[in-house]
Image (tube, rainbow, N blue to C red; front, side, top):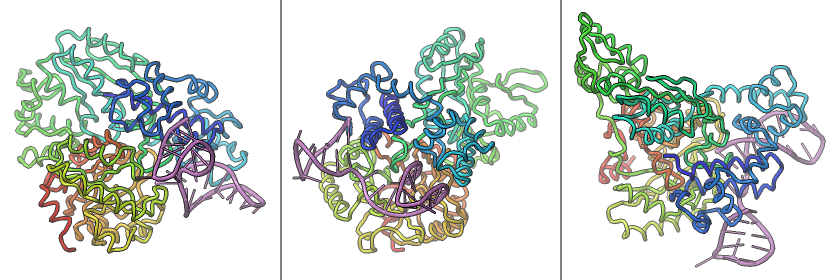
Length: 598
DNA sequence: GCCGTTTTCGGCCCGACTGTTTTCAGTCG
């Protein structure tokens, strides 16, 4: 379900951006950004809080609490509407372009009247942009490539955003249907999706279609029919902000959406209950997977469509009720949706060699998390309580290390945290607490802190947080050296990409995977909705080379512990089994891995 | 506008990089 928290966090972040653009006080801007993160990362649903309750949210004081309360009730607050009146929504979308911040966005709007990305591209093409003070040829080029990056994901939304929306809609439609679920690329767990496909089984589609077009999300009805209805959601820049709450440019905790979630098409198809399985199989895809499966059917003298599996000669229906029946009648084990990409899964299913995929339930702990000691928004105790609630056998706190200057970490703070963690051990007898850190990999591959300090941590994750544009040879050497560091057990978000915002660093991936395998350094699958790093196909390459993985949330707030869900879907798309994932192992085996001589 | 083992004012996330300047503004992490 989409909570009020995420919606209001989006409004606060939008207000901060508008303030930044209209020359507001920078500390005031920062306050709204921090409040947005606080609200988005708060464990309690805003809708259940009164104003004093809202006031308890980190970084929310009297003034913002009033606006938050109003926003929960009415969907907005007057000061936001005032600024929205001054700056067209399209100007905010300009800021999705990397290296184009509030000042430049305002300049192109004020000077050239540019209020959307199309107009900006046109101004680049005809040279108008270069006339502006502060805009030289290099800036022109940076903007041009930035637009390409943003455009690359045009019309697509992050899987996490789509999943929230799809589940929320399924929840509301399900009471009117015999069965209801989402299908398509979302069910396959792709990192971004172009639309949402919802499938329902019902004898009478009328009430479902009526409820569907009446959804508050339905801005435009594109198609209205008995078997298929399509709607489009409204374009709303604030809605582009992530499920976890964000604050624009800022810290490692920010997770901004690749594209505005507005304008997303949602299809509802209603089929008779008898053909549910065939329809679900068909509408889940992928197209390539379905072609492969139908090929198999043809060879067996059968015909497969969304209406069922038929005898090709007599047109007699054979099965259609469940996906299992369809696959089994074709001589296949049921294939998990995350594998249905025609990347060998049909042959594997035929040979009975499908992997037993890693699941969220199989995760015994989280090995990459933060607290408010650095850039998290929840305290150590809040994070521990939430982790215990999830039933974890172990949990690692891995706050940032000193070289990420903005986090102001010191050895003293780290050691004090270690003390506090030690004190908490008695409170969580069922959950082993690991004191870790997230180190920064310098351009030369070295990390923060001397060896004697590193040796005292239970766990060291090492990640790239700077120098994203080094040449491939240097980046590769950098990560290989980090793998070779005997104190580094996990490489965090190995490519550093942010979906739709930042390209991955230039790496010779096979060389890095070889190094990780040779040194026994695990590679992370980071569940941040805009990271999903490593990504699906790279996981498979790495796994083929014998790499071990960590499926991590990189949570900076309590609700973000759920990010392991997105990491797990990605791991499944990389065909991983629990045995290949460190944090599916029992504690004793994990400990052996962490403490073995290297 | 928020916050406080530095508490009701005066700080606040700091440093680097880059392109455009001609001494610095904008952006990022």
